[in-house]
Image (cartoon, rainbow, N blue to C red; front, side):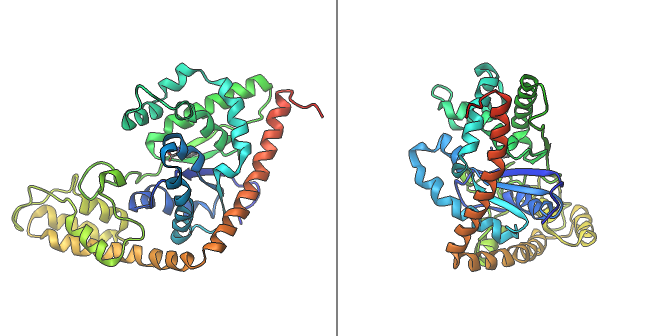
Length: 336
Ligand code: TRP
């Protein structure tokens, strides 16, 4: 356990599907490192997932435990990180209720993350109010724990900016620093492209490799990986830009010197894609094998996993309740 004074990290995922290599590179493996340095809270954002899934609430609730299994499988240690379920911490909803008075509808409509997500979902004419206002809810998630660091992908930066606006507005009203501003922590190797070469690995694009893919699925995915369409004959010079096999090797190959040599050879010409892919397959099998086997162990102990979520959620509630008490007191809402 890190010391009580270590900087606080709040991070989380919407539980709407199984996690994949994109999540692993973009966040999961970083969290395994962060938990030794920081006081880390990891939130399974089921309540937020409902903002666009009210037609299929079962999908959300079913995936809560799956996401928890993925966390444990990659090595997130519940003794070091607090894993909790958002909907079971009502204090977060309570904070969001107050914060909603510190944001204007126009400002919410201008939030680039919200705008883009509305576009992706085709909500333009019919936005659920909870979806539009979820920056206030995300501000609640962050500030409840007084997080100063929030690891997110680039697309979420406007959410952190809006959360900080709420913090500053609140502190101005309170005339003291009740809430803490947070910094977005954007990983250097943020977004992994899909196996088809599209910018993002995403289950809706069907271009993912799942964290619990079996060896045959990994092998089949690697065969399909987009490389260099101009590299027709082995002796042709190959290109690295946009070449997914090399982008994945950058993310997973433990031997950077060997990889640099391989790249130089490919660019010179004379190196077959099949050789590159064979190396990538070995790397991916090596990365995913221990994750898969740990996941299978935890799957046999679902009761214990739920218990661990319960304990994490209890801990999270205690912290969030303290912040709610401070917020209400700053607003003069203390009567008894
Ligand atoms: N909005 C985030 C996502 O879509 C999930 C999330 C909810 C989150 N609350 C958060 C992330 C607070 C960081 C901090 O992935």
